[in-house]
Image 1: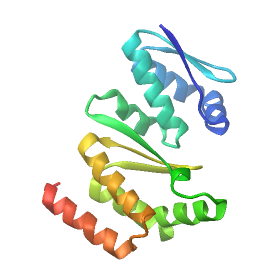
Image 2: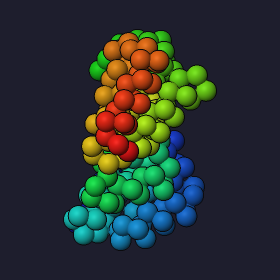
Image 3: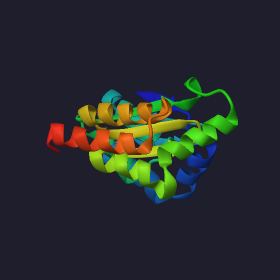
Image 4: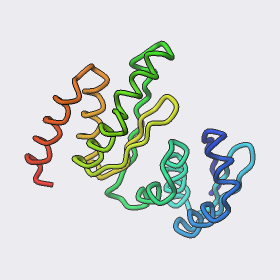
Length: 166
């Protein structure tokens, strides 16, 4: 089977320049990746689907190692499009800043208390993790989008981790 995926140009160029990253993905997925204007993937149907998920995560700002977690069935990828919640560039910039937090504190807090990886890139927030934990991380991001204070979010995350006994 052969399929195609388009990822942001700067991420595609990064993958094209670093042959080792591409080879790592090919080796771990058992597929062949060709990088041109887009990206083509060739291999068995399931492997091609998994490779598309890995490349989608890479395109959303994750490093290759974090993206490869998606080869495991219990891991998933969630992409939240921030343009669904804000219209202006200034508001988007402010919202991304709130999600990341001062010095990256809020992003780190969400990652720590939900055991996920978070990437804030362009107009999206992406989450890689176990499905159940992705749901809690998504809810944390949504709380920030809805205007929740950081202190309230931190308390909520701590309560969730105690409730779930992580």
